[in-house]
Length: 74
Image 1: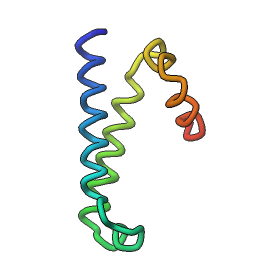
Image 2: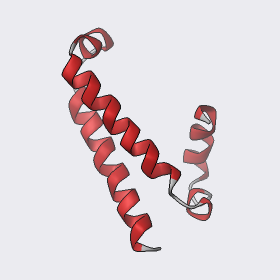
Image 3: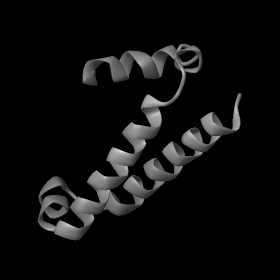
Image 4: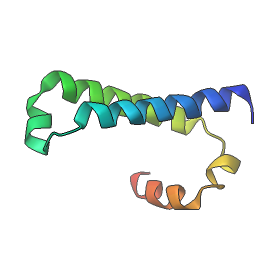
């Protein structure tokens, strides 16, 4: 696995961890009402998605359960 792929995968993990931290203990209404938290979460999800697009197909295919769940968003 190349260094670039590892960087993208690490970035995805970091973004996912931050999204979980930003939204912990909040229901949907409280989350949406907190503009800073909402915007920060959306930005992390955007960064996650950009990193995910750069992960090569052969690595994606190694994780069929994730690929199946993600296909509904494509």
